[in-house]
Image (tube, rainbow over the protein chains, first blue to last red):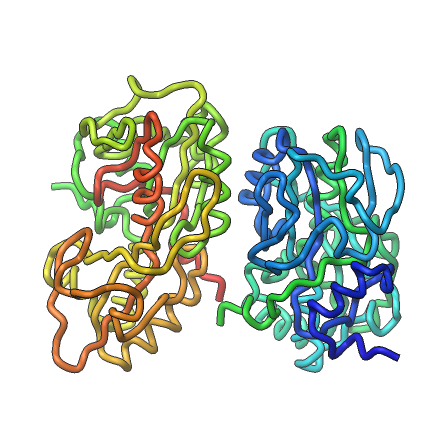
Length: 263
Length: 263
């Protein structure tokens, strides 16, 4: 039995490349930064790069490949984004086509890979500070909601900010604000604490993505900008092709989470 | 006599637009964020945007205009980058052409304006924390140096990181590290403290840009990534046209410096 939690990121990527791992990556290569993947053709790359620049809390770009290159040089020089993610999803004209474990056949010379930070990076320090993370306790997906907070648009891309929600005590919400403020490159401080209706969420028990979690008596919902935002926004513009990781099946980089803390 | 220091940013911009102010903006509209300007044609905009994404410490992008738009919507919705900077410099094919106070005649429909954070934002809290800033004391320009730290290249853009230097006591260097760490979007923490030769600076008394300042006995030189980096890098690639602010003649935005602090 392999100890995936304590393995080096590059060793886990090798297992993924060999298709010995084809599912979610949560908890693997502890301490190494995991990232969302979005692949677009060059014709949409400028607008998308600008969209990320204008909406850094929901779209924290960690790396962008050169046009036509499948190497995420800054995150892992020897990695290959065509093979090193357990499962991909292919979308054409905004419609889901299929899930695959290797996208070599889909790769075109004018494609660009965008690697976007994910909340795994700040959930580890939350847990280490004794703050319970409900969807981990309940072994399900984090609940995510479309809000009434519109992203700053860029070219063809526009849409609402999607947030993830973690319920916790008010005391923990304050500590969680401090902790996540240290990670401005991975969603940063919460966008909202307390009243879901103020950000356009009418029923907290019905997330738009992910699963509903228990909110205990005395807890407040705490909302962070979510990396699902860019995917949702891209889908709206129906590009001829978009490739992403399958939910939970992330890219595991050689960068360590702790290096992303600004203080 | 106008009190420019305590004036609102938009009122100072109006004076600039009317050409009643045509010189350096240091100390004007205290508390409002000032920014460097770079204007490029669309053909270089993607590479430059990517260069900034890959080198955020030296190229902290605060705003990017839509293609063909002279409105920096996020920094000041009613501003116009063609008229609201006291003095501009025009460069063609990497050669300086002239200084002007209005660039309306140079504006083309495929141009993009990039507004880049500047060290004024973190010098104010340094001063407020009792840390002397030598080039302000000596009423000259901050000394800047080319280093051996190469930027991550992007398309046609590559070159060394340029740093600015402020000498201070070791105790102040520690406090300055804490203070500037709170401003990751405006150069952030220092890149180096102490030994200039380790970053390729052979003679600290001979800066590549700006003026030499006194380093007192017991002081250490503290180096921050500098917004001159992108200008120097662009000049190397000799684009057909590049427009920037003249040194010290910055864009004064409606954003307040304090809102850029992550903690």
